[in-house]
Length: 386
Image (tube, rainbow, N blue to C red):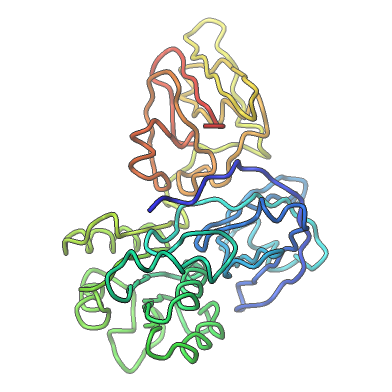
């Protein structure tokens, strides 16, 4: 099964058609995609888009997962308010229909290897793929907070496209009022009562069964997998949420002998400091060292080549250096999570600090996350078009 074809990352202005309140701290934002751009905005359930807006005179970029099954002409994302989050606060408090925002075409590989076959047709998505699995495929997701967003898209596509597939979710939140897509989850349970199940775990509310109260730690996770979730016949796992939870589940599944190829994961962030671009998208200020050692960073983007000198003492990422030469170099999170800044190393030695977005075969073929990659020699050349 091949991953979805990677499209060239490109922003286009799209108009907000609807802003719908999901919880006190989360909204669903719908964008209208004009006819001439619909092919560019086809997507596979589980992918994300990056949004770019000017907020108080500063360009801010954030990535958000698409929360609906593919529908021609519409892109829907969910935005949960983060404490101190500039974009999420603005979106929750001020964003209204009619606003035009720069939206990158869909990206990402948090998609099913079991069932996804085509783009933008929920019925065709599964028609041919389910034959690849013996019997009825069973998928399990473990999500926290807004990590439910891509899961909703994947679950709806699977359940609507198969009469036998089953989907199970462990969904962690602080309290019942924080549950995003509560109505949609209820609709899925009513529509597919024997094939869809959600197990809510609330960290700050007491529930009748203590297993579903409190934070998910090693002990609680082990009990959930032993007593609640059907683990023995799971064809694919989807993990989405904060780094600590995702890593906890990955370690537990590995300890239980689950093949890593069956485990798909996506992070909110790593929780680690980022050496990302400064204000806007021009790259943090760095200048060539007239007396010391400089590294030549060369790159190809949109068929055009460029290069810039980077002082070795600055320990600058390829992304930051490239942005100083061309502000249209693609990126979104700058934290090794989203994969938007992916490029192929054509020549040169390097080190990549973090990688939570590229598949093992991509890394083996020379692809890197330029926001996390630094040259270790005198020069490096990367190709964003590869």
